[in-house]
Length: 272
Image (cartoon, rainbow, N blue to C red; front, side):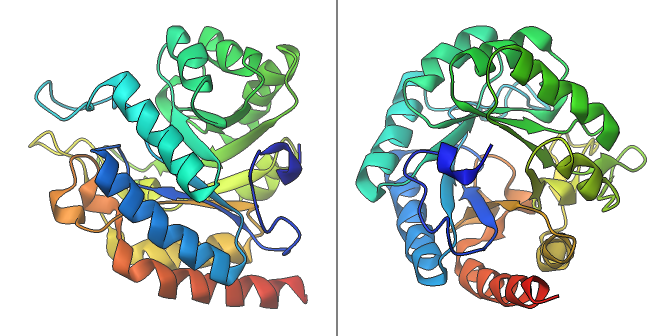
């Protein structure tokens, strides 16, 4: 696939990385529009192809009392409003086969969560909508194994898939990015580096995932140097009070400087 296959995607001739960016979860309309407005302005200034990211529900939570969403249809309508307001494509993750056709009515890219990427019925259901499918590499999977996930999408009649690396388990409570996997996975499909989820520290005893947001720029820079096609970054204007994944999200105020630095690195890499 090419970036031309993503509706509404701008700046695709800028020879830049593309960006999936937004909050972990849709918490409400005002917060989604506020985040989207700032990211759209930054990415337009820097000529970065941009896709707004937001989960319409959070099905994979450590505890039963954790936030799961504001209601499926309500959150999906907010994603549609973001797309219509700012003329940008959107991506959300799905968790059940029945989610695929529902979410496809509202968004441009369907994301398969890392824990579910081996679920054949889910991958096929996403592929059969005709939408672009973002396959997140399981924390427990080798880069080579993602070849088969991509092939499932193709066998279902859809050529439009990419892979997102979100880190690999390193012991019980930490993640690591194996940058050797990027060129491997790029043989199968365009490859994205999920910077913020790669810095999670899961399985904490309190039942809330930790993270290392101080390392976001370090990991993102390494991804650009190693020729990732895109970056995935979750951001929020108040990570400490975000309802999901606040421990590893980037503060929205820090996004512009980070992306400015990454664009400069990409330009330098392009000259090599």
